[in-house]
Length: 177
Image 1 (tube, one colour):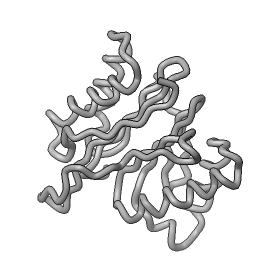
Image 2 (image 1 turned 45 degrees about the vertical axis):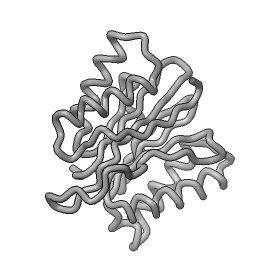
Image 3 (image 1 turned 90 degrees about the horizontal axis):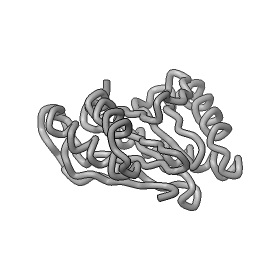
Image 4 (image 1 turned 90 degrees about the vertical axis):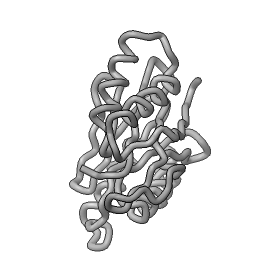
């Protein structure tokens, strides 16, 4: 499990939102509180969030954006292409990160182990506070009529009250709201 971040993606009908906390830790010390770990890609049609080593995640985001361009924004093809390269390339194989990516139709979790997973229940989370955020997201999705961005933000805030590696400075990106 990666320490130092929590990312959650919430999907409701044709709307999707991704939120991430801003805390960066080095060992037991907080280095930064306002890092942006959720970004828009491919002319704003895709949102991506990462957990793990920042340099590794940035490398993967750049490569993923390149794959999106090559595949005309096709999320699944781009994800499979990136994960295949991530798993087989000697340098990329050592990268320690997880990614959540989403567009208007699909949410995927990507890993260097070769995983391209489509989460169930319209909620996906990665990082050290992922279990807490996911539980909160599921509960809020079932019990409220809130838009995904509000659910995602509140889920990170709840996780920050439990996980010492998650803070309440939240970045949210949404599609379709």
